[in-house]
Image (cartoon, rainbow, N blue to C red; front, side, top):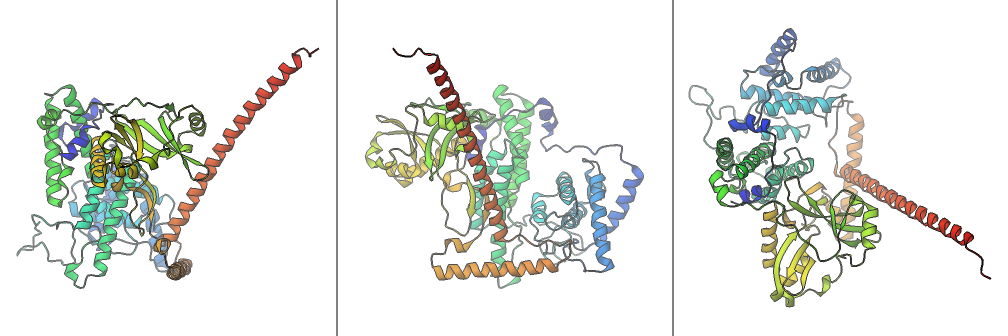
Amino acid sequence: MASTAALKTSVTAHNDTEKDARARGRLLTPEPTPGVEDARVAGDLARKAADTHNVEKPTSPAKPAIGTDATEVKLDDVQQEIERVLRCADESYAEILAVSQSSTEEEILTAWRRLGCMLHPHYCHHNDSKAAYRKLRRAARQMGVDQVFIDEVTLWDGEEVLPAGDSESDDDDNGKDAQGDVTMAEDEVPRPPARVQDIYREATPLLYELGHNPSDKGLLDQLNGLNHRISAGNKAHNKYATDKSEKIPKYRWLIPVSFFGPHYKIALESYHVLLQDPKNEVARKNLVTEKVLIDEYVTKHHLPEEWSFDVADDFLKAKPVPANANRIDYPWPTAKAADGSLIIGVRQQGKWGTQVCIETTKEDGRLVRRLVSASNVGLLEVEHYKSMAGHKNLADGQSKWSDRARSDFKELLWVTKSQIQLKNVAANKKDPPTDCCVEFQKKGMHILTVSSLNKVLGPASARAKIEKVCERDGIPAPWKAGWVSYYNDPAKVEKDPTRRRAMKDAQADELAVLSRSDRRRSSSAHSRRSISDVERDQQVQDLESKVHDLADTVSSLNKTVSVLADMFEEFMKTSASAPAPK
């Protein structure tokens, strides 16, 4: 399967302790830390258990009564909860959620929703609310709360009333038999629409990559961005739904990021063990157990079949690609960058900038090529590379490629890994810059842009070649690349100047209303961040990046001037000591 091919190229090894601990085929769940004060724990559990059963919906600290005693009590309660959570041992998960070890799943979910909304860092201005929320979220995961409900609170808008239990309907009689007992339907998740399936396809290579490091912040941010698109689509659907039965929960069909990452990691570890010992029973059992869990989850939630993987025998028959199999000796000069990567080529970017194509080696031996700014790899090293005779200028000769070179085409060697830094989701989809290393029979090796490759092979053939190489290397194709951050500003892409001005005026009026509303709110309230806030933050980050690049350039120039001054001083000394001509 496609997922197995991607997993095979990224097999990683971990220490024996973790392997033995995972021999049971499930995720590690640390035991609670002993030695916690029993009296205090019992008191907290008794009080919070009563609260959990009585609360019908989560408490939102965003709307207290202003200037009343009730406000002070609520604020005090929030502060007490923060202090209580932070006092708990990191691995006392039940105590953190204020439930007992024997609590039902619904009680645990209710506690997570109540405390998560109460301490949500976006809507709670108390000191240490962010640290308490992170601790609370980790406890919820360890206590078995499904990732969908974790994301439900994480993406909470500060206003929506979340249900008290694990229910997607407001009908209290749903799922009950004649005696009133709760029953669970065989398949409660409807099939996702085409828009969600398209997002799943974008997420596939990112999930494979997450198997190497389930806590990779960059990948998690990209996957969370995809989940935001799913929930936004659900919300837009409900806006135009005429009947209540047509409405769907905002958090349905979200990608269970924290589920697949750890399970893929276990599969990768088992594959690595099998490469060394094909008959290892522990690794074989782990793969069977993990495949059953993954397949059951994929089937129940109608997820792509590519998100599954092969068991031991199928994996061993496929002969995975060895590490560094795609290492290449380039016919032009290369150089080492400051971060240890290999500089393959450069091109001018804008008036002053330089874009660099680099090659990095992952921990498992895979080679990945990227297009990055010169400041990210070292300005001195890039300038030194540009001064080398015969260095690779990636912009040279791109316009000369045509279909006349099609018969000379031999192989597509690699494609750069693409990523969009800031995406305006209101604009049409635009693929990020991508380079392709191509070997020709007579012309030799060259680096082409995607546009040039399309001219040589034709768009359909070029697309197929690129997808095949990206799947081999475990990276997303350019048209499936995610983005680090995004915003939604239709005014930027509106061509009609009159409408563009009207849209900007509307945004300014909305900001003014929000600003006045913020001033009227209590100190515990927190308004939702607007589009302009996100854009302004990004502008600040861009300016900081430019200042950093400028500082690096000035530092490089200072060093160069210092070297020239030393050379001039040495020259003057030599001239002074030389005998005068007769």
